[in-house]
Length: 241
Image 1: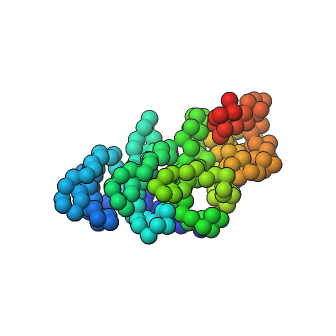
Image 2: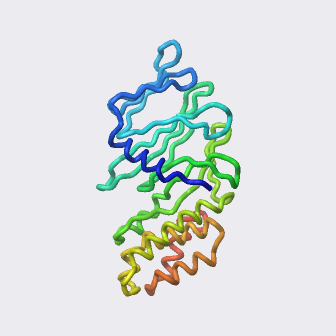
Image 3: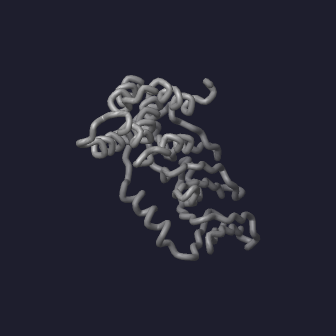
């Protein structure tokens, strides 16, 4: 899995610096985004779609390898004083329509290529895990992985491994940085509960139960550790409740 950190950073910059008016030629359609409102017209200049966003950033990508680009819009919104993101996926191969949208929470969603499944994938956060960030000094979310096939969105966590390991390598560096020269007691665990929960969830989704157990044993030293792990499992596998 190859990740472009510079590309992600570029997208963040564009959110705040983008021009007021953008026009995109999208297959047989024209997409006009002005003052955060998107209008789509066909070759006859007839309006076929309209939507109001908060602060959108748009680009084109062939996410299903059908030789036709999809329109990707990442919208940034402020909820409870925090910056959050929603990614929208549109097709214009025949009719212009919304394929799907994903609420990514505070994790900036992006599209990359997976060599594991030889497909473009969409990486988003799991916003339900925000509950673990309430007492944390540093917020974090575990990831979900998706792909589009025949204009349908599918969760593909069980088909992939590398993105979870890559994400956790970054989270491990953060934990080592934050806990350096700190006593690893329960109060410290609470400060970084969000990162610990994210790491645990990512390892579980990668099929690495042993590594998941090790990360909790190392960093979460509170007496409610079993409840903590069960709360995470209930979010990963809600049908098991």
